[in-house]
Amino acid sequence: MFYVQAPPELGNQYTDDRVLRAYLGRVLPRDVLEAIEPSLDAMGALASGELYRDQLADRTNEPRLVQWDAWGNRVDLIEVTPLWRKAERIAAEHGLVANAYELTYGSYSRVYQFALAYLFTPSTDIYSCPLAMTDGAACALIASGNERLIERAVPRLTTRDPENFWTSGQWMTEATGGSDVGLSRTTARSEDGVWRLFGKKWFTSAIASQMALTLARPEGNPPGGKGLALFYVETRGADGRLNGIRVERLKDKLGTRKVPTAELTLEATAAELVCGTSDGVKNIAPMLNVTRTWNSVSAVALMRRGLALARDYATRRVAFGTALADKLLHLDTLAGSQAEYEAGFQLTFFVVELLGRGEAREASPQQQELLRILTPIAKLLTARQSVAVLSEVIEAFGGAGYVEDTGLPQLLRDAHVLPIWEGTTNVLALDALRALSGAKGVDLLHREVGFLLQGVKHPDLIRLSARVEQTLEAVRAWLASAEPVAIEAGARRCAITVGRTIALALLARQAQWSLENEQDARPLAAARRFAAAGFNRLVDMDALDARKLARDSND
Ligand SMILES: Cc1cc2nc3c(=O)[nH]c(=O)nc-3n(C[C@H](O)[C@H](O)[C@H](O)COP(=O)(O)OP(=O)(O)OC[C@H]3O[C@@H](n4cnc5c(N)ncnc54)[C@H](O)[C@@H]3O)c2cc1C
Image 1 (cartoon, protein in one colour):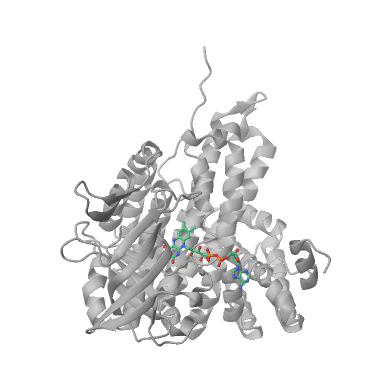
Image 2: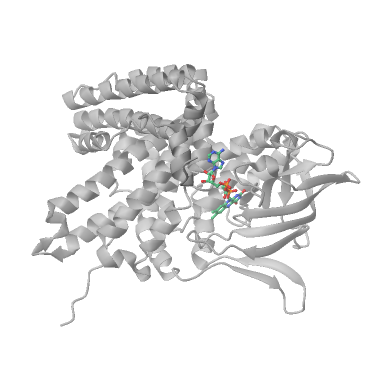
């Protein structure tokens, strides 16, 4: 008989998730955990059942841009796929944005919201993208203090009613620059009391959204980021027609193929100032902090999905007489990825906790500073980890991992956007350096690490704690002594060093807790393995050497 390979299967994605459950058990008060568990359980069942089946069935569908109707009218309609239509409804009903604003669980509301998002994301082909921007827009509007816009948009962005739920876009990138948005050429002109925008936006995801926050330069303003203002745009008027917006085409992308990412022309698009006629880049920052946190959560969620599938497959696939799950070398390979994921998870959810504390007005000034430092660091570290881990996951399936209709290659392709959008690795590394502002930031990290590690008792964890302290000292010394060119050239290595160091401290704390409360030594094994992969990237490297090597010249 012809041999048929057994596909991997998923159990309930909440009850099966040792890492998430141990984390929630440590962090949440018992009554909060008991109150939210039924909904996490329901989302875990959806993610491994109905949504996962729909996702596999939706695999070859893609969003469509319909530019003209049958009668020659330009309509520029975006049709998303059936999976995305369902994802939108489920997201609204389960409060994937709303939970953060209802504040039912005070400072733990963000932990709850992002735990749900982490379960939901891998089965919905990056529907986290519009949700991230929706959450970010609500946050930026609230921070702006613009009462009219808050009243108009925030209840729609944060409702649980799918019929009234709005999503938001974030239109920043132009062909002149996504990192250097100060080069933006979109202009804003006030005509009869209405602001009108003129220009081209080069990457705009979630273009099916009802609104967007965008940047444009009011006429007469100076060049650069300061001269841009933050605008609120509703994409369609009351008659359903686009608001001075032409959708030129959808991007043909490596991954995130369910996300309709468009190029737009703005032709007298009616818009409202969100707060003032300048400082748009500063005013959109609250949105970016939230979308970057969604990015980190998506990165750990995709790693977790890939590893769950690989782990299950290893029990089914037999080679050389035994299941892969019995081969120590295969397990050693998966364990390396598991350790990366567990460390990334702890760092991400630590940022989530800090965000939640800030929004519940319970964060100290030091915790707010810590959030500012760790948001870009968690984003850049977990995004790079997710690409590496999902590459291993593909290999863990052998040839099947390379075959499209297993649904596996898409995991890697989708992960590859995570280091690019919401700030590339290098751009965020420079941002993290600014946030650290030298010794002051390192002092803050030192104090936090002291606090995190104070309960660590296992001898291995005590040894790792000493290495954490030493590495922070190395960061301090490097920031104090390196030349400015070397600091710029080493910004990425510095950010990754800080990220891996703090992630290790967090993992060590979780490991001690799991030893004491669950008699589970697996987080300890993850901490040892994560540390063994190394975390100090601040070896002395000559910035001029980098120039020669990368340009491949002798000058
Ligand atoms: C699928 C997808 C969807 C997107 N959706 C949106 C969206 O909805 N809204 C939106 O506004 N944008 C969106 N983007 C755009 C995205 O945010 C930008 O592509 C990203 O910010 C990078 O900008 P860029 O493409 O101009 O690259 P560049 O800024 O040109 O960067 C090119 C390279 O140069 C490096 N670099 C840049 N500056 C520095 C520096 N100072 N030092 C060292 N290295 C540097 C970068 O790290 C990168 O490796 C999307 C992108 C993708 C791929």
